[in-house]
Length: 421
Image (cartoon, rainbow, N blue to C red; front, top):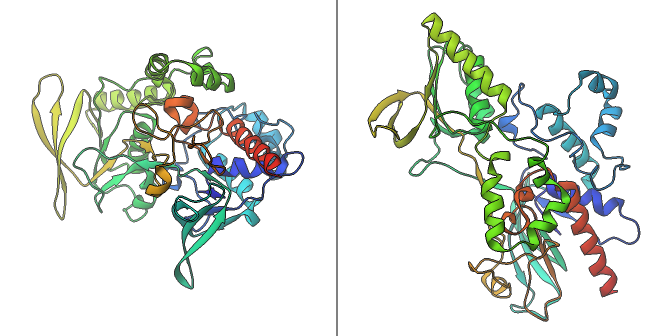
């Protein structure tokens, strides 16, 4: 049974369906009413930050019919894409590729069904079966269900992160819902004032999009570094996303893992594509030349307080250099402050958590095959996708290893099926 049906578990469904020999029976439950992947950030100008060959299948099986290239062929755009000389597709196009893959697995997923918790059958249980509790919502209303399974693969996605003391409202948004929030605003902006907090790719994309979409608006970018930092996408650094790097990382001592995570965070976290940085700087500079500053940059600055009234949002900003505090007003605050992964045991009831082996920090420990390690005598499998950065490296929450990881989990599930039969 799969929890969630985003790219990770779609890749797993494809891997199970394409594997040779007997495969475990699988069904997935997704709380959204239909497939959707970060719809609020499907900006028309935004591109992916991974190579198109790092789709849901190619690095696992280049001959799979669910590759991005085959998707292009079926859409009649393969030659056009090649002529475009692009290795980073638009986010809109890759979203449609994910939707295309999800539609091929329609018989394996129930939408509008949220997994509430997982527990062993009979409390401590006999170690063989798990009960999964769900809430299904449809035109008939909402009802709770229970399903029994031998294995669970949890891919809950990411949780939105907001600055300390900030909560979402009609005027304070997280970037993940940007496009839906903008739908009701007047074209051109009509003198609107936006503030965007954050220093990463999403923050820069939001800043550029608001500035270009609303030519009558002022956009204030607030971030703690001195400037947007470019992503390190050089070939040697990118080897941190290779499948073999997961093996090396998993076997490395804790100190080496921490060093690698910190040293290579600039391949993904709080970094921006160089071209976008240059475009934003050119816009800022030309407006300075003309004396018509609509793009405002508050660098080396942090958001200290956020006070919202009916008509405005008042921000207290603090310079990290001078400690000077400044109050500014905006109509809307967009927090492009990223995400954090869900805890691997978030859905596990206490009696199930107690059966998990723990690491030095008291967290459930995942093995190399992404299965949570259990006490002796337990036969079920609980696998996690997206919550293993400390043990499996930077690819844990990224698309780069999705196809390979799905194949590894599919292999582990097939092996358990063989041993149980």
